[in-house]
Length: 121
Image 1 (cartoon, one colour):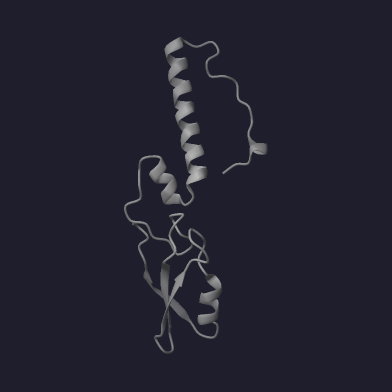
Image 2: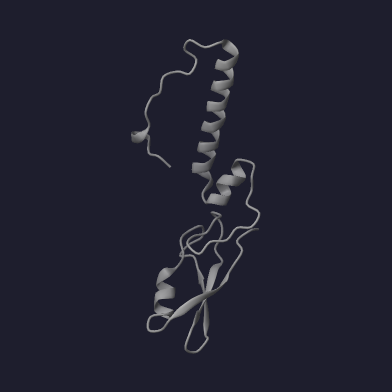
């Protein structure tokens, strides 16, 4: 997402062109603008794809929720010395992984991610 202060004005694509090409170019620009507006309003990456008509089929991430409404676990870590596991979720719905929970759980030992959860609805 770019802030408005980084936008630049470009010359019109319709200068010195045939009318058919000009209308197609403006239509393409209008469609792209609509997709960008929908993406900004949508939230997570899979919300953006869905707004563009191409929903995610298999959504998974160890970094963040891919849907704005997702609040479940992203992955599970396992401690090496006792094989105890802990699900690591998001800090808030649609947000990033709760890395503090992982840091506390794995603070003195090695841990591995042994499961990555699907976020698809």
